[in-house]
Each structure stands twice: as structure tokens, then as C-alpha cells.
Image (cartoon, helix red, strand yellow):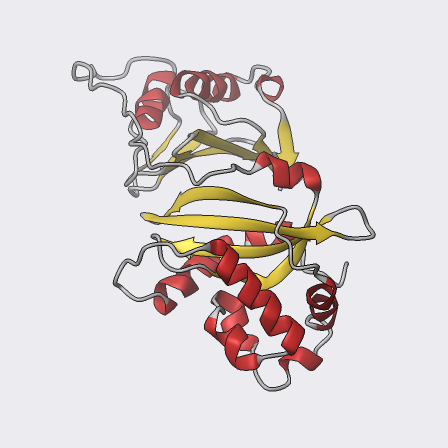
Length: 275
């Protein structure tokens, strides 16, 4: 593993980070400050091995690891070298924004230069509910150019998710039950041997509160959760977790889950990334 912390590893730990941030950030919602200032001060802290300054910008796991010996550790040393070699210029800043547990989390990626591996040196920042920028992970990391360019140049504005219009009250389900399948939902509802109609009703009920549905099958499961950009689809059929590269609309999601339940070729209805 590279001595630099993998950004992908940090993303997988974002749920834990969010819980830690909730404890660390004041209940007062502050206006987001300038990410350039936070990035430069994090670099300054590493360059000067300034424990007090780095603590000011620490969040999550970093807040629990900083002590007088922090800069002597193997994780900090390559980051110190990056900070010392910085030419003082910020190339570009990009952002990713997501909703988690009712809170808004923004990740900021401040491009400060390139490294010998061909990847970008990044100051990684995070902000919870428009709080002041803090270091994400160890603060300084590396990222592929492709992943950096996939992020947005601006922080996306909040847009309410359009919920499907309520239709007439559904009649008792009389469709064919699919034995060996079961459904679990975020609101605690579970049911066995679903019909297509019952499954579709569950999918249509997904919202900010009832935010995920899992369809357990005979060899694995298919699951979905809601986001600002659409529906996130993941599956595990005994070969590890995979996530659809693109977000799904409600209609496409219902089509995919129906194919999975009926045993049709659902896998080719999306491109998948291992997670």
C-alpha cells in the first residue's frame, strides 16, 4: 500500500467520519469559509510540523491521532515532504456533495501539484452542514486525475427530491409470489416471497426517511438507496460488493429490481464498479 493514504479508503470510511464530525462540530451552523485558507494552513502545519495548527483543522480520525509525536510517524513523513515541496500555487478546487443521515457533507479537493506517480497531490477537506472546512482523513493525499475531474467545479445547490405522486390506494396483491426472496426496508418493514406489485410499492415508498430497500435473493442481494442525484444501486452475488456507475431513475430502478426478482438478465442493465 502507498505511504500516502488512499482517497478511496477514506471515502469508504465516510460514514464513520460523519458520526465523528457530528460530535466535533458545533450545533451552530456556520457559513462555509474559504477552502483555500484551510488548505494553505494545513500545508503550513505539515511544513512547519505545527501540532497546534494541525489540531485546529483536525476532524474525525485525525483529531484522535495528533500528539507531540505525530510528525515523527510513518504516515506523516511523506505528507511533510509534499508540504515542503509545494510551490504556493493552488491549481484548482473541486467538490463532491452528498446527504448522509439527514446531514449535508461536502468534500473539497484542492489540487496543489502533481507527483512522480502521475497522480495529483490534493489537500482533502470536508464540511458538515456548511461548517468551517476541516481536514478530511490526514488532510494531504493523492488522487487520480480522472477521479479529480469527475468532481464538480462548484458546490451543487440543494434540490428537493421529487417524490412520485401518490396514486390510488393499491388493491390487495394477487400477483405471483416469488419464493425464496425477501425484502427489508429502512423503516423496519420486512416481507417474504414478494410479488412484483408488492416490491414495486416498496420501491416507490423510498424517501429521505425510508431511505433504502434490500431485495434478498437465493444467491445474494440487490439494494438501493436514495440520493440527491437519483437512486444508488448495489449488489452482492457472492463475489463482493458492486455499485452501478450511474444513478438510476425510479422507473429504471423498478425495471432492474423486477428483472432480478424474475431471474432475468438484470446484470447487463448497468455498468458496475467493485467497491
